[in-house]
Length: 80
Image (cartoon, rainbow, N blue to C red):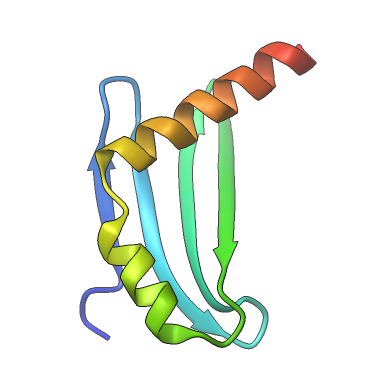
């Protein structure tokens, strides 16, 4: 697969979005970023449904990346 990752630049950070397919995660999208010295990762799994995973990967855009960042920052505030 040639188009297996993309980087979405945000004002504060860049978000790496990967389309993965392996034994451990099955069909999934993995999003990662570095915030406050931490490497944060979220995996969205689609079991064995590669078509749904492909569609979700194609749709994942700046708005999704900003939502991911906002949720992480809120979680850090509530646990900090």
